[in-house]
Amino acid sequence: MKTKKQKIFLLLSIGVFIISLTQKSFCTNSNVCRYFSGFLSLIFGWLGVFILHIPTFPWLANPLLLVSWILFRKKPKVSFILSIVAFILMLSFLLVDEIITNEAGTKSKVVSYELGYWLWLLSSFIMLIGNSINWKKNRHKP
Image 1: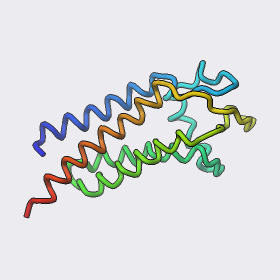
Image 2 (image 1 turned 180 degrees about the horizontal axis):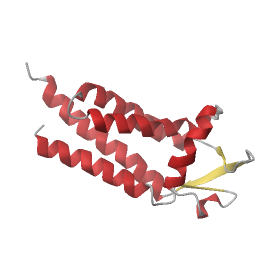
Image 3 (image 1 turned 90 degrees about the vertical axis):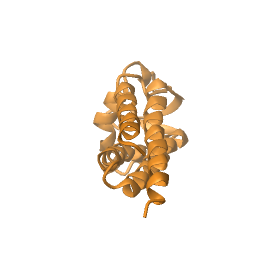
């Protein structure tokens, strides 16, 4: 893949990710959607990983996507694998029924996925497509 095309996929993925941070990511039955933006999900989502709260494991897609961006040109195979895992982790959030919604550990039922979630997922999908094109092109080179 030419450098210009690589740049387009990379910048588009990063841009969509940044836009996702400005949007609501999900809503719960306790009206969490009024204030729970993608940015707050990014900032606080990692906390659940350390308390082994299973629905927060999709948050791990964020560092994987970041590393995929960094390695996109220099290590296309690694970047491709990381983008697959990031996409699957992001997609797995659709399987989440309940999520912790406050510092007291109160759980609420997830009732909808908002624009921020879909843009977040799209950012990894764009990276996955860019990586698959890049990997296919580089795979046939001697």
